[in-house]
Amino acid sequence: MAELVVGVLEVRMRVRASRSLKEKRKVVRGIKDRIRARYNVSVAEFDDQDLWQALSLGFAMAGSDRTHVAGKLSEIAHQLGMHPEAELLEQDLEIL
Image (cartoon, rainbow, N blue to C red; front, side):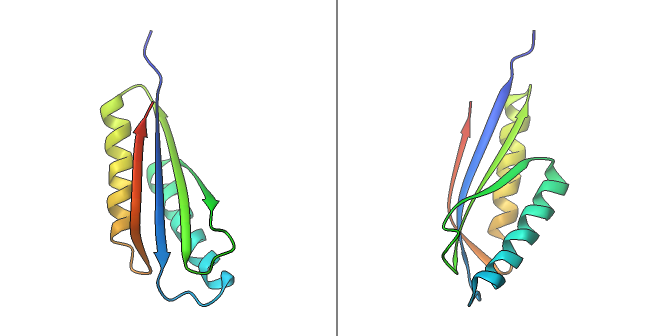
C-alpha cells in the first residue's frame, strides 16, 4: 500500500500598496484563485485578516510521492516570491 504524504506551506507576505482591507482582499483572492487553479492545492488565509498589509496563507497538498508534493509546494513559494503586489517575508514548508 502506498504511503499518504501531506505537505503544508505557510507563508507570510506584505501587500505593498494596500491602504484598506478591501484592497488587501482583492490581492488575496487573486493569489488564492491563481494558485488553487494552477497547482490543485487547498488554500486558506489563517492570520492577520484585520491588518491592511499583512497576509498569512496556508497551502496544503496530499499525494503519494514526497518529492512531488515538496516540489509543488516549493514552486508555489517561488511563484509567491515573484508576486508584483505582495512581498514574501517568510515561508515554512513541512512534509508529514
